[in-house]
Image 1 (cartoon, rainbow, N blue to C red):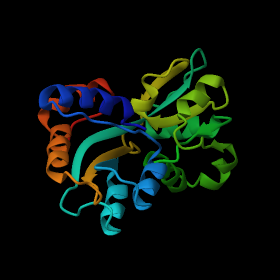
Image 2: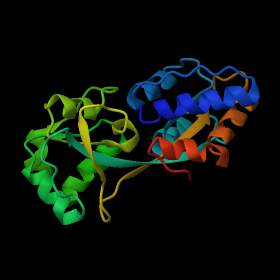
Image 3: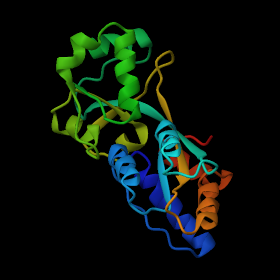
Image 4: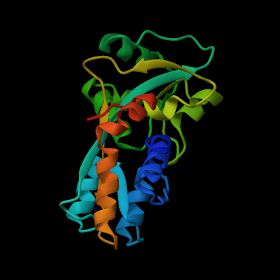
Length: 219
């Protein structure tokens, strides 16, 4: 879901350039991997790098087709109008996390990395009762906007377009979290060469400005 809006824009650009029609389906990463593993026919799959590697290992993605195409930082947010804690350093962020009544954490790779950060701080077990994880495909930011979550963590690209929240920025040095998103040609694809050309466009310099507009970074 972190790449949904970015991919919609890049798909329009590629269609205009190539004349080929692209059909995108954006779902939570867990669901996307499950559907590919179940044998559902797709030409390509775009997920976090480690998830693509697992699909290569299981034979569902062609092993020579992986392309790393974008980096995505994790940011944090509070409800619009709420007090904004200092999160400009690792020590300040740790204090803000400990003070928050509830914490929104996604189910994706960024959420896994965040739980590892809490564990490194020695706080995971104490924080666990306050951690709220929305179902796959539901933005953490929507829980922040509704007031259900006081401090929410998610990919910056997913927080940027949401109303009702105030962005506090990306995580500070020492505990910054970035996800590398990769793509691969599915074993079920009947047109692998055309798919490779599309994926190469996603990773090309021509896509850099669009990535930055969506809160992501070219590789």
